[in-house]
Length: 627
Image (cartoon, rainbow, N blue to C red; front, side, top):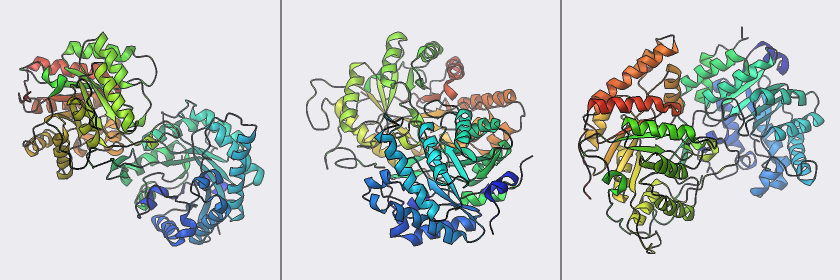
């Protein structure tokens, strides 16, 4: 017999299950297929997933009904089966749960665009009815509680709570929002404000799920803790920030790391903990092993035409070094330094940083395009301002995520007209993991197709073969994620990018001189300049976050332990700075160029390192590409 849910979580921490959608994708379900339909078409698969989570230690199961409201099901042609899908989802979870495990009816956002233009009219009525139909079906199906999750707009969450309370005044109700920006919604609302509003509307438990990884969700829980020790909180983090590998989303955060961070959430007041996107039964099992669960003191990604983004069988033209590489001063190590465009309209800080970097001796400033899918100012416009007002060359990152093939070509032409010297072609981080609700990726081409497209414009024609009455002169860059444990795949990708027209590569951060030397040896055959990325660490927590939650970054355990051996943040910073200096001294005489990444946009750190490299007088490998 299950104890009273509200009483239970006031005394103990309850371990819930992990992801449903992303976990079912690993079972072979196509990502563009409706997951909730499986309650009817493949109930055994859904049931076996519930059983896996129970074996992993889950004591609360969510129904496979997150998107099972009429407005969302209509797009899949299943609107007439709304009640049937929800009741089947409840029945499957209840059958797996037996007499001792709670079942929560999962309700996600309606799919309508919020804020509503007419909340009191027909538009608002349609959303209310969609929630009413779904929640009524779940209640009739016998769920023990309701969990409203992944809501980005407070207005929509309050509406769903209102409907839930009208249908069942006493059933436990959990209300989770997404806080991607240090405890704030994408619209800027503070978690504490949202939590208070949800409690006033009738929620019993408030918290957060999904978002931008465990650390970001911890920030939200720490803010919600101000509601008071008597208010139970819910925490369901993602398994880090996903990357696209072979058309699949891969989440990097390891179970043991997430268990440690979720432990911090428990200390902050979380009483209901589980996992969201990317988590699996392995994560839940690790949570159960390490948390000591007791009372606290808890896309679419294909290239059109050929895989290289051009007509089938057409060989790419020979690449040109481009303006950036051609104008590098001889006899010294090239240095590129990355800054992030601001998340607002004030660019004075970035311009100040660019001036400092130019004075320190940087050869170019590189600017990401909405890195990690976080909304920032347009990088090509900012690159032009930097070029005009500071005089330092620029490298603009260009993603395949944000524009279709037509828009990419137009942007390439615009970058040429604005005098941009270099472009780094990248596929782009998944929009769904960013800070803009409802944003989606385009991906008409991936990085290979974009490199070929840039090379064609450098030759004076567009991908359709039309002459452009001139030609671009970009130095075309490629991203290179060298992974010492299994480098062959990424090296093959870099070989292909070089063949398509890339003339330089910027790598993910290195934290080992030995790894850099191995990378140089393994890529010696390539006619492409490689700029190893160096990320100056600033704290032990910073190192842990990068290692566990950012794809492609691996920081040696020995270094992370060393930083944690210092109690004070300032001592950690000094130890990290000394490590970076030693790393630069070891690799700078060997490499083609250096790519410095400003930590948290702290350009003072990279400006000082640039100055020190210039004072040391390193010339690097001295390798240059012939015109």
